[in-house]
Image 1 (cartoon, rainbow, N blue to C red):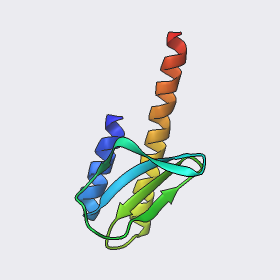
Image 2: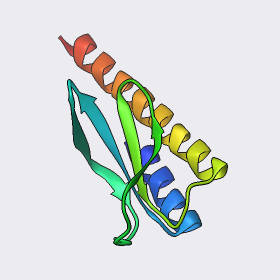
Image 3: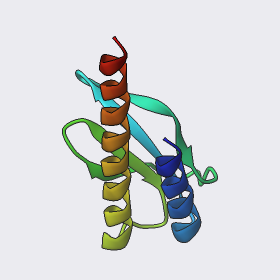
Image 4: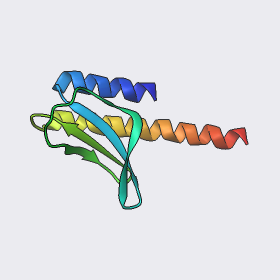
Length: 93
């Protein structure tokens, strides 16, 4: 998922924030390893984008539409990367 990680790093630098992606697992939310970027800001985390499977959290001074759009792109990237990964596993069998 290097493209997704790179996008997260760009977001962290552009918006001076900490950003990470979690996956919804039933009624719980689980952090996805390696899908985080930025320095700890010691601010309350906020949901920047959420869909039926993923949540993107940020620690930022504020949320704006541009930040939300970038977070939506991260989820699209993760979704595509995970689909590719599951497809390659089933085709190897």
